[in-house]
Length: 124
Length: 285
Image 1 (tube, rainbow over the protein chains, first blue to last red):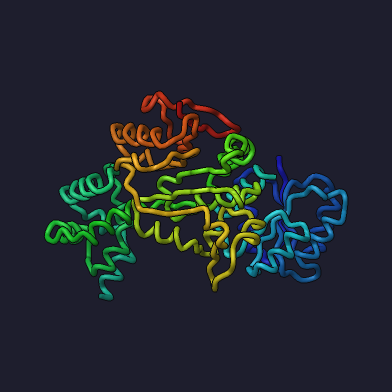
Image 2 (cartoon, one colour):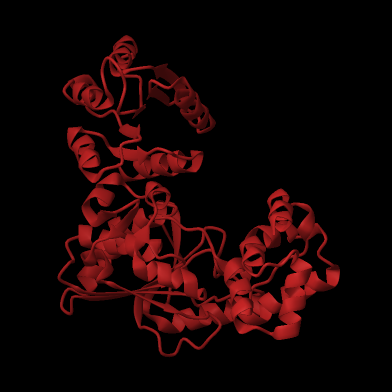
């Protein structure tokens, strides 16, 4: 079964994303910030097939998390999608250049997440 | 007025009150004006789609709307009814798979075929708000065809959506769906809360109102036609007529893409179904 990591400091958002991903057949793990997310990746190395990541989080933000993931060879191929309230083109460009594969602006719907993931899966 | 608003917000009972005679009247009105068949028991759809028009016209019920149409034959109200019922949701790179097949197989073949003239022409029939035509335009730019003579015609029966397609301006919700972020960053500019396509993407496109039941003799020839999720609304003779018309607009060997629930089989046997990846395209003789 495909396994996804949901990283967001809002429990509500984590649960909403987890429900959508479970409906799509993913097994889901949650983390409340980038540091914790790295620990989860470490503890289950090589098993994740997707991570959805918020930008603004305490301890380690989403951009720092993406940079950390991309600088580690073990996770070079892990598809990363940012899901954030940041909606400026420059921020989007920064996230993509850091290694995000795609970007969803909040607020989102289940359909948006599903469509984006389908596209990510087909076009990668 | 407050009472009317409350009635419509709570909603449900109004369409249920629609008389059988008025339901038939709206069915016939839609069929005559657009060829679209409204199936029985679609009261809820009528209510959802026509509620904004009822509010705009300060009407209380769908029965009132029928009375107004019968009494005045007002062409503007009449058109708005058809437009409200025919507006279809769309999104960038809808269904993804056909665009993948276009990108990997059909477009490279077309580029090779037309390398001397450097000319390509496409038709997005029933283009709605333009996302299909612009998705194609983006794909062609990504293939390095900015200096080719590319024409993408987008048509729709609905004047309002054609105007929106021409404006090439989309809400955050619309660009969030289906559009890869790298294309958003590359081909759009931010306009307040909205996102607008850059001139280079718009340059290939032209949008017009067009009824698919009309003669298509003046259209084309096209290398490729999109006509997705439209035929399902028509009866069999109209489907046949539209498919024959589209076949006539295609170059020899040109392709048609239908919606995933649609086919030419048993309707127009001159098209040859061709599977590419997870999608089926219909090739003209």
